[in-house]
Length: 434
Image (cartoon, rainbow, N blue to C red; front, side, top):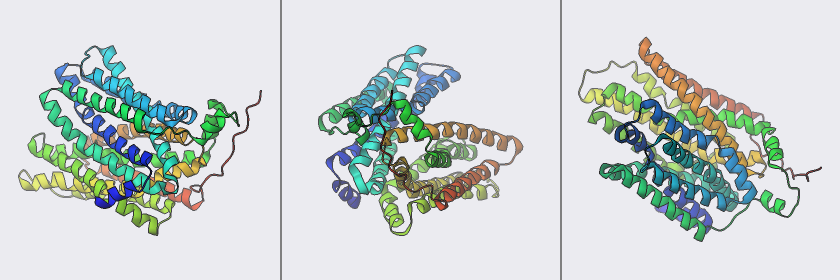
């Protein structure tokens, strides 16, 4: 960890602040969101479909607005969007603990989602701008802080929610309020080159024209669709893997412990190994090769679960718990490894395919495409899990996920071999004509 912090200190103050900000953002988010469904269904006594609606509105308002958030960041600068997102999440989290009517809950949930759509593309584009040629290493460090927040947030939330969920909401809102103040006072203003040129009246494009240009960027779109599988696979740490643990171990303390181990292994592996793995990859692999190998590892992560389906399930005892815990934990570890290999180069490839123009907008569209893919992929995964249970074919979902990972790796290999992952030529915007 000393080496990690030494690397962080080698960057500009703005980059250091962005990494600390991302840790804090995830800390506040994950101390509240894992316990929101229980609050809505338990404390407020809402029906299951209402709980699903409230959570769905949050996800839709974030994924659906990423492109808008990215475009606004490129137009008006990164700092205003980061601050606006933090302020909006302060309001949303504060409301979630104290309102009980459906319209108010939907408004609060939408606010928390929109907040993410505002600051996420802006943070990544800002990091690209200030990290310069070291952006691959910067994104590796960024992922360490990102995962640390995910790991610590639920633990803090568990303690606070044990007292009162409203306290959790207030603390989470307070974190984002403090973060807003820190951004205003300490984060330097930063605008994309496109925004600066537009402000001088040099080649200013309309937002619609910019979006048309991005949609016409075929290599970028092909890359975005090929990477959907990585997000579907990594999300199984929250969906298929815990369900498999519960299927074998039951709903008691043993199952809860196994799920906790699964999450801890995934987060700790990233915190301890990300920078070393990125350094190893950079010394030996081209970016396209790292992406292909990362996706292949993520697909192969489901092999332990596939093999475990051939093992007779013990009636009870330590053997049953090990069968429930070990294959999913190994799968989570391999998913983390694949993500560590691919993630920094994934973020870098988006920048290269954008031609270093409208970076936040490209990140926004990329997140929207992958977000839609996650929704569709999770529906398909859930259907595969149900079908496997009804047909008595426990291997079915793991075969499907393995196939998805290898197919996406093959698609990326095709893009790499044909040169479509290379940097796009920088095209200067033309002045708008009347």
